Length: 258
Image 1 (tube, rainbow, N blue to C red):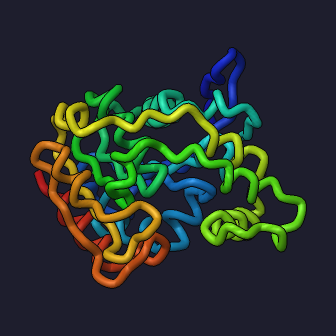
Image 2: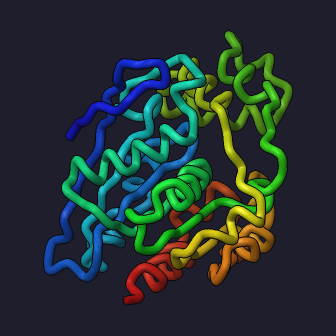
Image 3: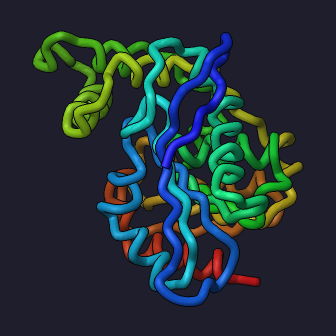
């Protein structure tokens, strides 16, 4: 399914999404899944078994590709990836699906977007899972050019920054629009401080791999959100925690709560 969302300077972009009902009776409100940077709804949620897990739990799942990712339309303008627009996309997808309130789960960049939804549009959220996000969120955003430069490099062999090379390899494996991803990385970002995060008034689960060096330990982030639950996924890093059974069991336990 498709819908049109607004660009920063006027005009629209096409967003692709799936709306998947459970095979039997629904056990709660729909779940909106928000994938990470350079990924897609299929890579983040289908290939990792999340869709199957939610179906078995009786949950209707709505998952979409961010603008510039997967099958959605790309822009090469960083302004079109402003996190306020990415949060607005979440609500637009829910409205297109006829949903007014949902649980939301974001991974990595998707968790950053979920925070923006909680700040800008709390009325559409029942419960939120912030996965693959830790203390680095509370630091000044890294506007380093290493990642976009790696994405735009003509020859990957010239990339010397190992972390940036990881993003380039991942993007190439996804056959992604690397110019769009570079623009997304350079997007206008808003990292809310602890005082602002304390205003979140929805139940939140913060869950992160024990060895996640990309985003750092999640303790400070969870402590900043009033009443947030914290779970650590033993022995997992940023990539391996995505589809881990502990991540799934803790997320389903949290979202199935009344």
